[in-house]
Image (tube, rainbow, N blue to C red; front, side, top):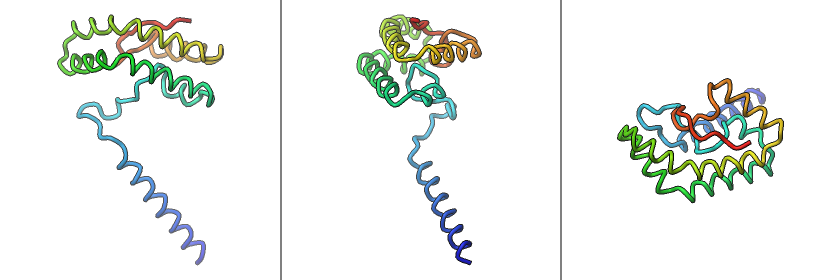
Length: 142
């Protein structure tokens, strides 16, 4: 009887925790359900495998990139929403030096094994690096 109460209490706590966590998540834009991921230079599975030191450095690189490019990123968002391919191309070209510099820093914090894993992931995905929406972006420095 005690075990039944304990199991019920644990199950209730787990369910409550999951529902509270789900409420904390921002709603996806219509048509973008399951397609959004945080801004980053590495695929999420690779970010999960970074050491604590690498993750700290990686987060700083991403934050610096975001700090250096807020206007360009806002303009890019507007161009994407307007489906203005010419403006998107122009903005990509303007962002390229920032992206290349940040990606170079990211590559510097990776081990040779991690670089090989990233290369393999990109080859399986069908390109050197997929930018937003799978469109090619600037290739990283090695």
